[in-house]
Length: 257
Ligand code: ZN
Ligand code: FE
Image (tube, rainbow, N blue to C red; front, side, top):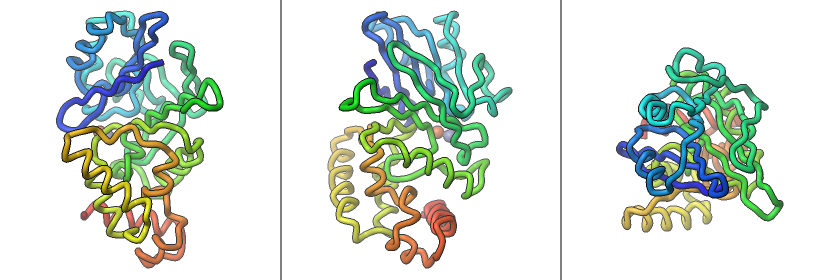
């Protein structure tokens, strides 16, 4: 399974999964149809599935047009998003499995950004291979999604699930927000040498207009304050004495950053 990262709208990423052996493709969160159709044309591949993480327009905007171009496409989304993703046909819950090519994705229910948000985790086919996580607007490189429909406690639980995945899991998130996220991270975790090094790398990459995605669970655990609610340095920085309080304060500070 080959993953193609397609920039869309102002700062979204669409991910096209291609199976060269059957020449079929699936797409994660098609913000718009055109970049997907262009990529499919180049690959001469047939689209068979749309994997939506949540109902926001910048993640489902291309569904309708893609369905018109490929009428056999199956549209997947979270069970809690029933009625909010107009073309949805498959309603997924925690622990469900969906297959694509020779791979299988496990569904993780990760509410917080929205109440129906899900993530797709493809575990590695061999131990030395990387797993692939498509997490929409739940976990970002260096940050996490805003809490539009969920509580801090829900988001903390959702992010805990993602943090528990193997360190060598590639993280494919919904937006290119990394530089701004790390600027915030430095204000609360500035003594962290891994964070400092990552910030320098990301700054250089962005100045060359290069993408900073995919990240990895290992790197996020070292540098993303929203996965570090139980680190002493961070709880001290926000004057908190409990993980949930640390997370809640970090999220509030980021909202105002
Ligand atoms: Zn969203
Ligand atoms: Fe989004």
